[in-house]
Image 1 (spheres, rainbow, N blue to C red):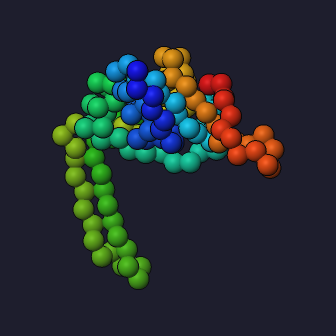
Image 2: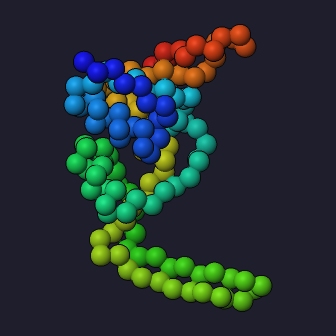
Length: 138
């Protein structure tokens, strides 16, 4: 069995971890927070997920919010320079995008990864002298 470590429990690391685990690899995700810390933490950002990303997440079994997240039908952009509109445009999407709080995404994906048998390690230190990764629960 292949043993793989992934640094980071974010937009790229967690889907990769899920896919590798489903393929039979022994996967450890190295992260600075467990799922509860992510879910209860402050808002880092809200991201817009466009249809190609939503399709990939759905194929990987990671689309946890399709029915709950607001649909985004289009986009409008305005650039202002010296208090005057310099560029302005808008358009509609062929399929809706979704807006998702990243805490929800990463917290749920990390919990699902651990529930599926994945291993999580924290970079948090026990003491100022310790630099070893510590196991965390998700």
